[in-house]
Image 1 (tube, protein in one colour):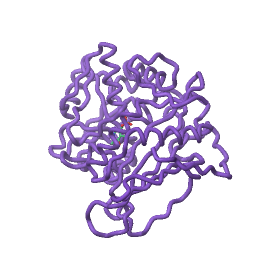
Image 2 (cartoon, helix red, strand yellow; image 1 turned 180 degrees about the vertical axis):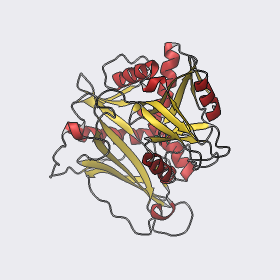
Image 3 (spheres, helix red, strand yellow; image 1 turned 90 degrees about the vertical axis):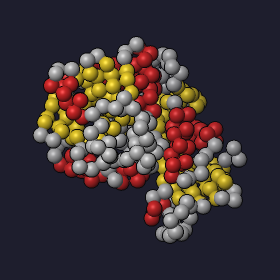
Image 4 (spheres, helix red, strand yellow; image 1 turned 45 degrees about the horizontal axis):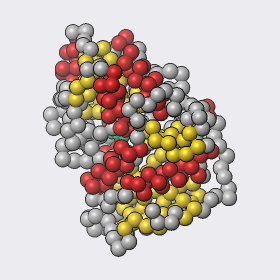
Length: 357
Ligand SMILES: *Cc1c(COP(=O)(O)O)cnc(C)c1O
């Protein structure tokens, strides 16, 4: 890595109360910034005080949305270790997202060092409580001032971090889901498997409508037939049907979650049958009619495991596992968060230590 310039803040912020962190409301004292130009590649890496950035109003990201992002967490381990969870997976995915969006890729080792250095500098911002963590958000935006529709020649990579609370402060709480049959999130050949803001912009209206009807997330169906299950909100989704765990196979429009991959690996490690395949919403509701739908849960970095207690599709409303957290959901949550927090053994080598506190 070229020499990383570090300018420390002389006005450290007051840290929020750990009971009231929520998600993504507070930001640490510093941020990482690097620039890209076609002549120089990625350059001018620096860690500077967190604050507003200046952009030309014609910056291409503001008009055509050329952007990618990632989301991961740093944990404070019991022995004073700073722990990242499978950061190589996030970095590889970021480069795949860049490729899809026509954005130049980054050197994986360089990005890992940037993340590590930033977390180290702001290590006081990693919450004390084991269930809380420091969320890390790397993102790249197209900054060239131009209104032509083509790949930008200039980009900014920024990493910000935010202390966050556990999604479920008092135990796992099942959510209710609305099966979206009007809007779709992504189509094959589109950008569904890239982590990019544009997928989110097109999902907000459906999410708001589901909320208005009293559901906390939408379940997305495929964009072609609106029959096959894809994801739930901004999470991947799993179902336990007659003893077998099923998750939609990666088909180009589903985001390949790190938590999804970890759940599949852990289930295999435990010897629990797990299958990646197409599953239609009819099949799922039929399994429920026959008493075979035993559990449902979403997976993602923010919540880790989010049990699904109820679902509505057209006129049918169903309750899953009596509206309670299922056994596998609970076990996966305890195991994966235990590994992330450094409390449990790490049989699949997921922890990446970046230093001592
Ligand atoms: C980030 C994301 C996920 C979850 O991925 P993780 O790597 O497990 O956090 C799932 N779906 C969408 C649309 C996402 O953006």
